[in-house]
Image (cartoon, rainbow, N blue to C red):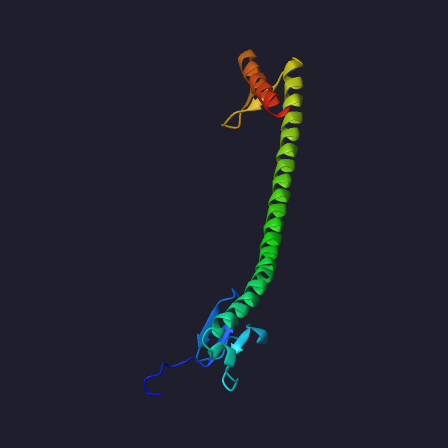
Length: 158
């Protein structure tokens, strides 16, 4: 045995269907059906025979391929479900934002219309300036306020 290669004692299929060789036991998440060789387990004669090993490995490679799509499809389903949930959450957030913006626009519209009605009524209006003093709006100030109110009406009252 001095010239012979060292063989791993464990052989199993990982989650992607690839063969893993190791001198240590597979991780606990590897199912027992995926373990192909372990210490104390007799070596399959068909795998050691020349020519027959190709057929045996071909048969074994069929099992991982059938197991692989099932695992992948479950993973894909989980990923797709998370993606759908994220899209639904994003759509809900977008709807809530749109509702909030629509509510703000409706409030702005109502205030602007009320302000415009007050400005057009012709009654004397007063404002408080930056010094806290009360000033009466003259015609120029009244028309400037009316234009601001009309701009808000144009923007928010659609």
